[in-house]
Length: 463
Image 1 (cartoon, one colour):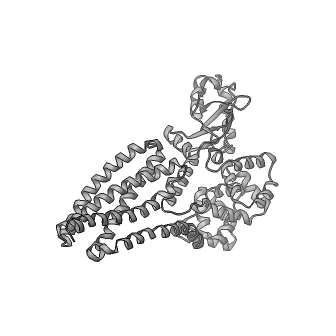
Image 2 (cartoon, rainbow, N blue to C red):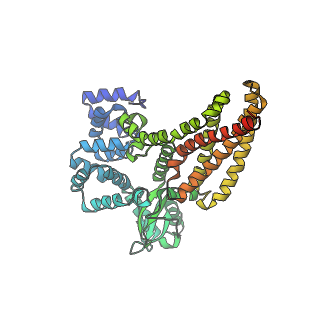
Image 3 (cartoon, rainbow, N blue to C red):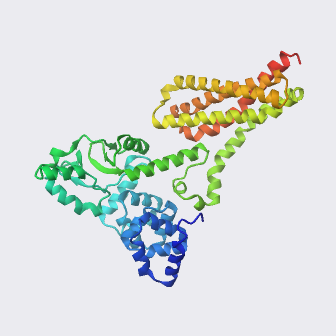
């Protein structure tokens, strides 16, 4: 287990649990934020944590469950009776319970759903059926809707009564008879209108043509839209413009966190796993960690054999110029770092939409110039390092400096091209870019280095 987040509370809670003083525990925990209770449950460990979860009232259980890591959710629900699990899912936010249902064993889900009302059962099945990564998969059907012909007075009285059973009433969505989205109105706007014209119709004060997300729209694009327009929530509509759900700002934060986690793992060559990605570092089983990392490491292990092939190819040069070997770590390290910087820059630009696959020419030109300038600066340092610090002859130092120029230029060009070409081919650029760049630059950088050495030190010098 990792670092305990509530070291002062946990011992006292353990004592109350062991002493069976459940009433005192419930009284204390009902005033705590569900996220904090979830952390305490995690700090206690599986046995005592599950025991604490079990004494919570049903509504609090549902709130706490939403803040637990996915792995813990699956374990705890797996230990509940189908009736108890159904009660928890019934009270959870609609999107969270659909996510949980997708993580559970199919037979277990069916046993739980049979204990739920027909409408709730169908809602979970519908949300769980949407393609992962789309707006439909992350939306909730738990929203407030109004008819366009209700008065502001009626809306003001109705929304607070619905609040306990809705994800948010900050905005109410105005829908027609066929549930077509007509507009939206904020609770603040309703209050303002109530003070001025309480008998006005909602359609007279609503915002027409609100920003919407499509059911099959990529969740990352939806998150960007929410951030760009600074929305508290965004309505989700189907192909017929019928309102089917909403995505709230806290859901967007979860989306961005998951996307960033996935991109970071891909960038490092770690196979993403939705269940494990959300788990804390210390909860990951070593066997699962090894399984996620081994694939790319094996491929890179084989790919790095290219470096060995290059070194064997130029053994005859090493025999004549033995000092060349001393600078190989410096050169391939510089190339790998330069390529990684470029890849990170291009991946960010692709994610933000600043760069598109059609911009290959402009991007290559820009990064080529950048790589050349960086190479000239680093090459000058390399020349000074080789000649003054290592005592090499000027011509030898020039080989090191020129190799750095060529390697930086090449690394920047590859760092720009690989993610752009991967995106054009329909591949995820984050998955292949960084590991592939490192391998390419290692092997080709050596070719550049030895080629310059052959020309300057062997042919021109007549060695």
